[in-house]
Length: 355
Image (tube, rainbow, N blue to C red; front, side, top):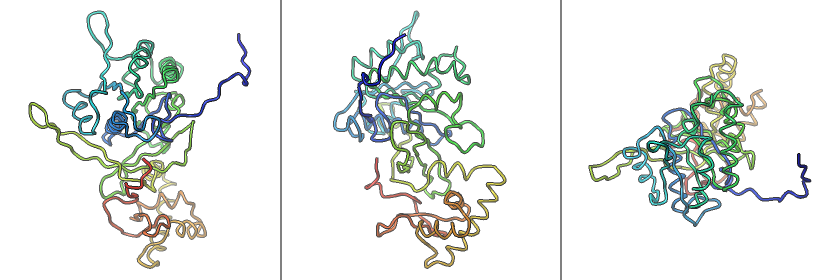
């Protein structure tokens, strides 16, 4: 046994792969439902890193990325998707592991040591795992905390020793839970071991079908970061055999609605529905009596509090009351408007977004 005094520990600042959101040298998860662009976020991150465009530690310096994907075809989906995102494909590497009789996919924790050597050799800044669960050895029960940790903890050590960020995609389970961390499929070890979690959800209030990304966990930094809004469009990529069509993600700015707000609105709890209905009825009546049927969010919260409604209750009632929000033209914060329309409700101009 060895005891080390705290005075002998070298103190270091936290460094960020993506400023304030994804720590360098640590594990980050991006969980969400199917079909809302989780893989496109990884492609976006990969593109920005390989071009030196991601705000953070490597801004201005293009860096290599290892992209470990098991669910999609590189030829038909991943390659075209990375191309559409603007990645430097010379700096994106598919990873295969040589086994007796041929090559196989990366498997954790078995391949961690060899992976660390490769990461160090070429200076990889991001290991993108799409999804993380598919890289876990089939001999490990991902629903048993102790077993799962035997795969995740070596991966965390790899990230710490190499400085490479590991960003893994995860799926939400089918429960009606409104906590993004509790919705991650598998053992709680996934969210416990990860230092940061960026949850995503589709916003049913958005006329443009946009989704929201929120910081659900940030052990090494701030939790009060603004949520971001993004849209998914179809991009055409030219190939030697004709055009390929893939999804492409674009962030449009900040959102006053978080993933927690969206998940809470979808809750099936009868008492929460009743509270939401009551708050929506009050909100509709209040805004109807205001000039242009709108008021600042601060005014809504103040008047709502006087009427007995919490800030969270009012935010959850917005969809029910068909209330949209926008940034004030005069820089005075958010404005809530009744029956308002727009292509990106609650979105702040991408020009000023903290991406």
